[in-house]
Length: 398
Image 1 (cartoon, rainbow, N blue to C red):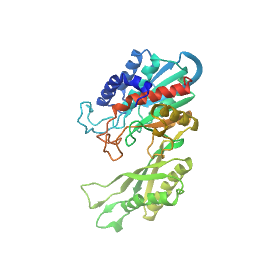
Image 2: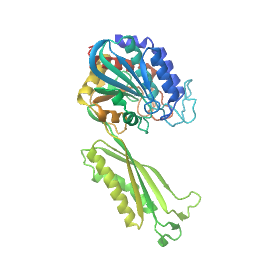
Image 3: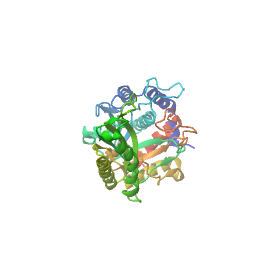
Image 4: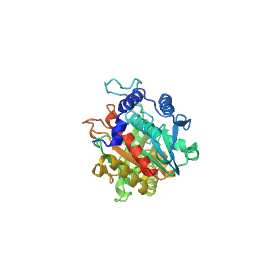
C-alpha cells in the first residue's frame, strides 16, 4: 500500500510514464544525450527550477533552495545514457534508433529524479539546497568523472551525494543497499603476444604466439586461485581474442591479442591483478620465444557507500515500504558504476530499487543489458518518493 507521499506522486504518474517512454523510444549514447537533456531542462524550467547545462557536454544540474534557512547542501544523481544494443521488444515505446536502446533503465532513473524535482519545487519545505545531477555517459565512458573534472562540485558544493539504480530480480516495492564496498572496480587489460608466425605445416621454423595466448586464457584463473587472498573477491574474464585471418587457417599469425576485464573491491587486490597479469603474460611469452605488449587500464573505482549516508538512505526507503522491505546487507556486486567517482569526492550512498522480474530474464522484467529489458513504470512514483524522503531526512523536514 502506498504512503500518502507515494500516492501524491502517483497522481502524476501518467505524466512521468509518458516522459520515461519518450526517452526510452529515443535512446542516446554517451555524450550524445542532446535530445534527452533538452527534455530534462525543458521540464525543469517549466516547473520553475533553475538549471545549468554543459558539464560533460550534455549534463544538466538543477538547483532548488528550501524555503527554510539552512547551509547544508546535498546532490541527487541520475544517469541519462543508453547502450549500443538492438532492442527486441515489440511494445509501442520500443527504440526507434537502430542499434541503440535503454537496456539499463537510465530512462527510468532520469524520470524518477524529474518527478522528485517537480514535487520539491512545489513544496520546498526543507532547510538548505538540493542539486539534481542529470549525468551523461555512465555506460563505460565515465561521465561522472568528466563532470567532476569540469568543476561539478566546485560549482555546486555539497555535503553528500546520493545515487539510485533499478534492479531486476528485486521485487518491486523493495530496496537493497550495504555500507562499504557495494560495487566493484572495473578495469580492462590487453595482452598482445608477438612471434614470427609462419606456415601452419612447419611451426618449428618460427615462433607461434597462439600458444602463449591460449595458455593466457587459462592462466588468468590461476591468479584468482593462487594470488588473491581467499577472503577477498575478484574476477578476471577474457572477453576478446583476435589473431590471424579466417581465410588463411594454414597461416600461424604473427600476433594474437587477448583482452579482458578485471573486477575488485580493494586497492590491494586491484594492484595484485594488474601486476600478476603482466608477470604471467611476460613469462608465458618468454617460454615460447615470443614477446608481449601488456596494457592495463584502470577505469571505474569501487563504489564505496559511507556508513552514515547508507543509514539515512535505509531510513528514507523504510519510510515508504517498511523496514522489512529494505535489505541493508545486500551482497557486493561485481558490476561497476561511475557514480563511484562521486563517492570518492563526497560522502554518500547508492541504493538499488526493485524492478521486479528475476535475474534469468523471466517474470516481469528481463535483466539489464539484455535486448528485452524495460523499466517498470509502476515504480516511478516510488523512486521519486524515495528522493523526496531522503531530502526530508538530510535537510531537516523529518
